[in-house]
Image (tube, rainbow, N blue to C red; front, side, top):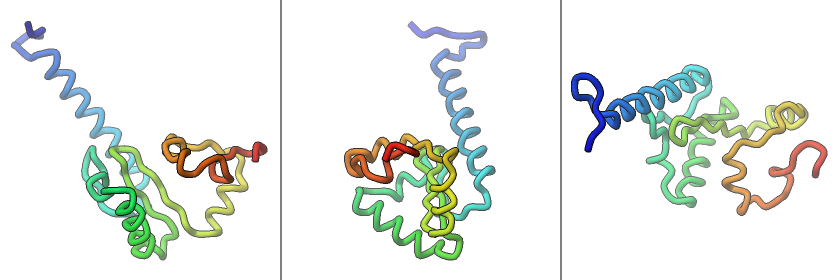
Length: 128
């Protein structure tokens, strides 16, 4: 039994379209906010996930992109519609690490916590 709304649209179909519109809105809002940061061209909704591959391929690609965008000192990659900015310029890293307001870690850090352990990268201000 399928729930329908006026005209025969299924509730599942309307929900799917709504989620698609939301995903596109999130993706393009991030792309607009980070438009000045270079990086590999992401696809709508899925981002650069197809370019990630295995862990070994991901780290090779990050190294390759670091060389390609070396002048900027950073680049953005997208896991879905969520951007991750990779910074490898020492001056920029120093500014970020000195500011305690920027000390909150994103969920990507916690996904890598088994690999990173509880070292300097996982600590918060005053706990290391």
